[in-house]
Image 1 (cartoon, rainbow, N blue to C red):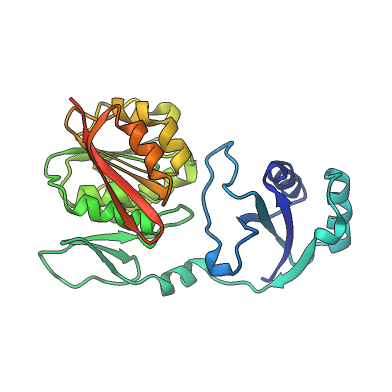
Image 2: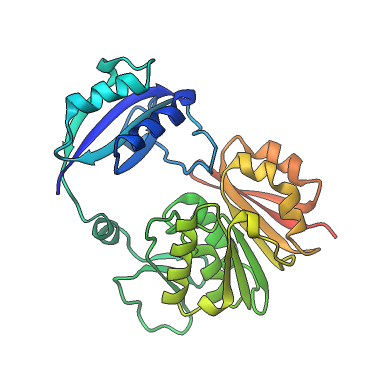
Length: 299
């Protein structure tokens, strides 16, 4: 069925109240993007953690409603719930229905990372090649397919490691792609951590598809008390990476290789200084405007 899309531009501090109001009015989904980006291709989309604000000073917030939703009623209700709202800020358009999963599958093609590793969408059969390591992926509702530069940086890093028999922790696991790739590359076991329960469901489903579910344990951050890992990787955002550095140090064995990504170019210097307290051999690698920092746990 078609949908009715309501959009408005607001300041970042207004976003939580606006999102709550729209959810109360029955919004089916809410999308945030950078209001100052000049073209849609430049609108970087992030996944704020619980309680975190987006990274942009002004936001375009779009909410989908049933096609029969009353535009005047929605405008009036929002005017009452959000006293600061000017009704001429609101815009409405009709959006055609799409099979979003099929659209994703049609656009996502097999991708190589490093020497051996390939990511394949679930609807394409990989060729029989004993030298290739293939991860079959359906991202479901979670972030992480390998198409984003940060995920690509992490997959390439994993492909270059000796993982046979190792334990791996993937913090911010999203679709589970990094943990599953590590297991397919020879790791003995992996732990995935994410603050989104939907991500844990997607990770579990993808692990089953790749026949590694028995070697992957999944946790919310509050429940994560795993033993220090032989390999540690985190693909989140710069703010949480800085805040969680002591936690990551505790979660890594002495001498363990580690990598962090989700870092925009220009944010690396602060993180290098922060992680230098616990990690050695720090190295910066870039892909497009994104950064990966890697090194080893001091010990």
